[in-house]
Length: 113
Length: 109
Image (cartoon, rainbow over all chains, first blue to last red; front, side, top):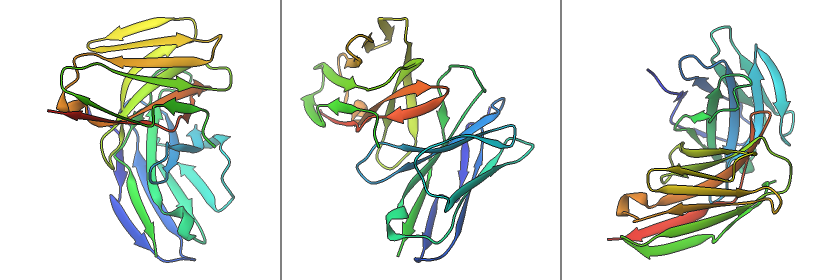
């Protein structure tokens, strides 16, 4: 039973570039959430996708966008990268409305030069 | 912004001792969850306690929840070197997790 998988593991970009991160949810899960974790901080909620629609959004600018595919996998896109976007990006999955623990992937470490 | 804070920010103990971490939060919740994170890796779920529960146990873990004080505590008994990690509490409302600032636990052999 595959857990949450994320790709790539590490990524280095320069300011102004665009990046796409990918996530496959745990088998049987239909809802994907994305979190940003800066060094030494707790994760912060970016947004959540269910039935291919953004259902909730945290306090992040429009440069952060996402997509969910019919197979429940998801992408996080960040445009016009800033130095402050350097962080660990975590994907979590759950069954919609289940009030259950979320399952996290190992994250993508994004470094902006 | 973070939902609340965890206390202490860092904790160092010897193997065999107990470790207690506290978490405060600000808003209504459906449940509160505790996660562990080893350095630079993903979060591992430890225990979930629902808003109508007051205490929950799982192996060496004991979690309490006081919704009137908007606080929770995690107790790890008989700690091991392998428990060395960062521990986060997260409140959940409509499956949106709001994390605390975390406690860094160091367990010395």
